[in-house]
Image: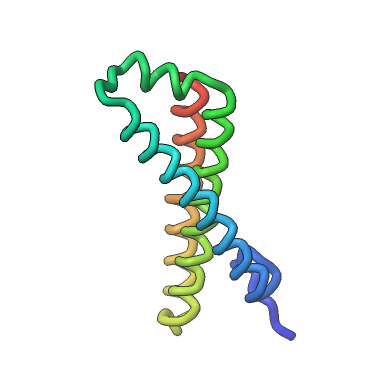
Length: 115
């Protein structure tokens, strides 16, 4: 059996589970934010800052941030292996995607924990 070194998971099933679990985390985060916005009629910066200053919200946001990076990686890896047949182009594409996701994750963590 041949395994790919650029694959996040060990198998297609593992990637499928990662994709579904991260989708659930992102859906819950989105529903929470939509509910918070809908229940706050006159939202001010202080309320928004107060929400994100709480530790549980930082942890929830961190889970969403990690989920979006993992979700995007599995999706982009799947697209690249399905449609980019030239190995060199595929590796460059995957490296660029990994670089952007790494920067997004580090930048997001910096912003999230500096509040």
